[in-house]
Length: 525
Image 1 (cartoon, rainbow, N blue to C red):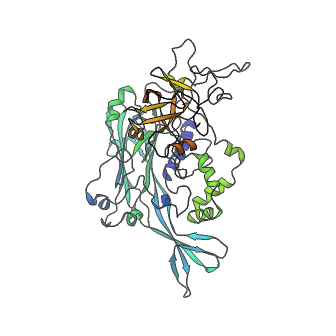
Image 2: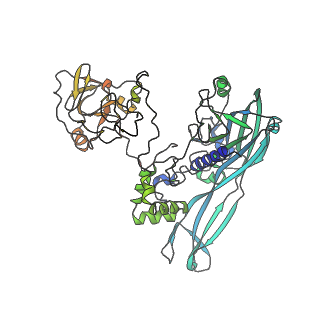
């Protein structure tokens, strides 16, 4: 295997592991947390007779809805006749951890929790075991009808005694019955449509049973990794121009296939292809990556490592003890956070990857969102990067805040200077506006501050006039944010002047993010 493909496989496997445990156990990693009582929400393949108890399911582009099958279709370009495809079907098998206390008669009785003589608490909980089945199928066989293989897992039980005869932990798994079929059809010279279909083949599930009662027979977080040997996959997001129609003809159900590994250097202008593909139950971009600064999985795929790490550090001793008792993976997260070296933690803050070099002065003027991009400077005479719009250093450089006064700065709106103290009427645009802003259409408001954002734009921080908590919001620095073209100056408005400044003053905010729910953040880095 070429080094590039091998490295790409390792990168893609890391992303696949994050997908596998996405939502498995979320901060604050305690069994008692409400979010950890509703689990197993992506790529869940349940018995067909249970899923279709009310009729056939409607396929979607991702696996956030329960189904009994998952279908991946993608385009494959083979370079030679002896090409082959490696298919890895991965999922979690539910495992129920039951704590049992010893009784006087020498038997055991199930309990929700048990504290042993060594001071350790053990909790009953639903764990999961990772499963993977690999198939390597030559292209010739795929074209002759393909191959079908069992990908299920057997039932099992394991017993772990607790210290001093206090009891035991029993882990039980139900049988998971499933199979995967792989087949290909020719579309043109060296071009094929590859189809991978994984089905839950269990039968006899009670259609009236609650979901929790049949999860033991399900494949959880199901996804597929594909690798071409002598073949490459075509991006369905950015296909070459000549393959756009064939790409649109691929039908995926409860999964979303994207190219894996590092993007090619230099990037092709004629669409994307590559030897690796990840078909996941969540929507990802081509070439998803785990941030290299991330020291380990926090069970929120592409999580904000810094904020989750900080919040985990702030858990009380009692909360940490409960998290450790909930699941061994939670205990490992706590161990990693508590022993993280300072230099590793420092790397979690402030990485910038989205900047591209600005055009040369002779080139056409850059787009507004390129106003803050850096221009290469001579090492012998470093100079601050200037924002063409403001004539000052951009926000990430020292001095980027100089000269900014959000509470007294103004911006022209319909030829009228609008700033702190101005009264305006809110008129959010119907397209591209925050949906919540539409509820404020036509209301009057008072401007508290003028705030430039990192892309060179401007937003007005306002409080709504008829909001009974407007004064309190102003004191706390909680505002609604509108672009200048989303407000109209009111006749007879107050002259712009000092107003209650936002807290903290900064040139950076545009629309501040909602307060994260216990650090929850979805997406892929």
